[in-house]
Image (tube, rainbow, N blue to C red; front, side, top):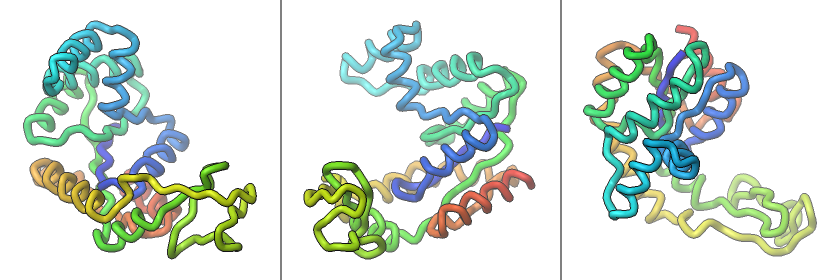
Length: 215
């Protein structure tokens, strides 16, 4: 089974992808991770990508396509793929079709985690963690039992990610909308798009995705 998992930052896409990996033995193909790995390993595609990046240029669709093709070849035909961060344009969607077809594969499902953007902004901007042990908390949904003291390790220092602010989150949401808008109609026309409530409890989201993959 080959699927695209869509969702803006903070929608829980990474968690759900990992659960699919664990349950079904699928491989999560993140273009960013693949690019870094190929550069580090010094593969032909990785060396080509490294040269492009060292010139300060954007990695081309052709290089990304080659990376995906290499990864699919290494996986073996019986391992399903979860595409993360690709495709982002109509041209990339067409390219992915060709990559899969050349390997006797097809795209089975596109699952989009839908979110309430204002609620998502609150979810992300309220996050903070213990600076000592990394346990996560939230201003509204999960505060320490004793204010200022970590429940897990007793630490008294906490930190927030610098990009977990409302302005940055809204910018990332706008970028997501702009990138997914061109590709969703392509897959909706094929009848393979399932929309799941990404604001639900994580287990409910997992169950909804599993249900979509059985249709």
